[in-house]
Image (cartoon, rainbow, N blue to C red):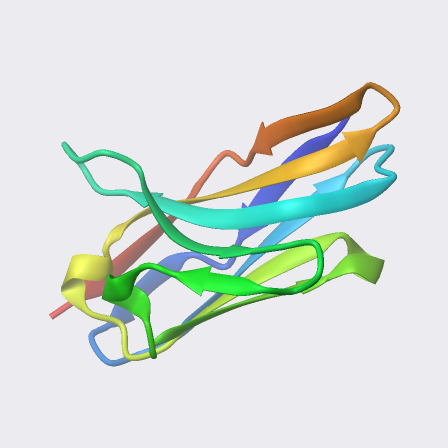
Length: 119
């Protein structure tokens, strides 16, 4: 069974850092485009950052210069390094990946990891 599992969330003070990981497991031939999203209570889920198969990256304006997305294809893992965290970064963070598996290409979501930034 193919799945994505996030880790690394937690409680941090404003100005601090966290590193999120998203590990894909199961029979995976290739990880294609991947991304991090976040959803705060009562708000829509927003794209935070994305990374292409070739490593090209894009960031939402509200995290540019503070967050860095990366991937390790050998480990089937994606990361989000979050620095200079602000209380408004508090949300559940989800990873999403398009994976090429024996069933073909499909989009998969992780279960989410809570990030709480205190002021």
